[in-house]
Image (cartoon, rainbow, N blue to C red; front, top):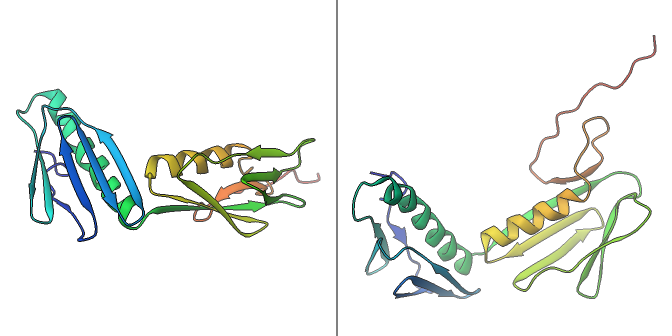
Length: 178
């Protein structure tokens, strides 16, 4: 039995679940999310808990069991509390600013980089060197943060670039004069 799949999903009071054939929708104070799931899995709701059960121990159901439970749990946590990722920009002259809905990045290239966040994602700037990506969809928040980081990944010699706030960059020694 899957250790993750057999855990019950705790549903807070302010979160509503609606289970239809093949689709689950979760509504909370921060918004609403919908997700499709395989109809072979059974979702059993009792009071403030939701259980995901699989029909047999076939390889297909074992692989979908924990995945489905985790996706639904991420939806419940997202509409209740939300997700956020912080990015730090390091380097002389590197900065970020907001122009309307666009995030404008100046990262040492010959051009500025304009990024329009998708609907449901908000990008805030705590300072010109700190970006906070937040939203209710964990996958979307992570992918937008990864896209911003990919514009100038941190390099190991001086540590210049965009990194996650809790990321540790392994530094290398540079050339030494002989």
